[in-house]
Image 1: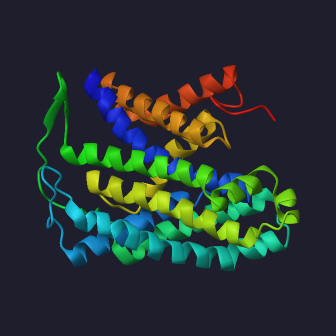
Image 2: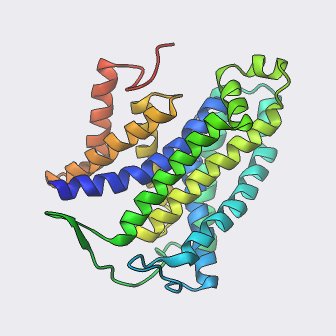
Image 3: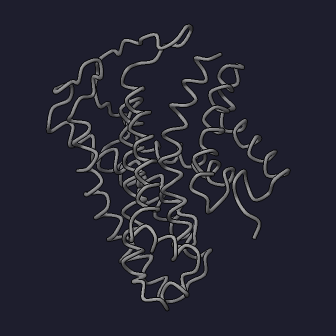
Length: 298
């Protein structure tokens, strides 16, 4: 059973990164970004291109086989994907915000962009799965009855580092404090001289960075494919709602619950119903606590 706990923690780490990006977008921009999954997938393909150019399998670091090419590819992919996301915001979301479009209009625009992004990936990258490397990893025993690949342990460490870094950014920097102020009350923040356009751009960049990191690491563990973002979208939203919309730490807790639930669905031979099991747990929690695990009543 502990093996499934370890697998669930790995899955939860990736879900948490993507869900935190969703949380940032929702808190500042006030709408559910259904295109976040495609941001994750596009970032993974940018990273795959960078790894291919640098050379997959070179620069290994001890037992960790992905080496420095994957680590270098992540910031490169973040830059490229952020440019795409900021262009989309300038062409689509910014005009909608300026015209005081309703929240449902923004959601439908994001949904349309999600479909467009998935089809563009198919067009340019093809429908076949792509692999970051072709080596066969060797698992090591980290405790009695629990084996993990060193790469997986490194990926969990990277995800924890990203979450801690986000926490430090939001609590210790002026930019982070301004973003929290905009999240609490945009009108009051604007009156106090906070540049909302700058905050919006930074929100997109941070959300993109989290999604690209999650997509790249997921692509390394499994494979990169056009539907990878869509497959992650539902667990990310489940983690966001379960933990409490608007609470970053609740989002991480929600991701842990969803990740473990999906892992134990496999343990009980319900792998075909992983998403259903996760959402059932989410609904049960919301029936008892509608605001989520760490959310606050409005």
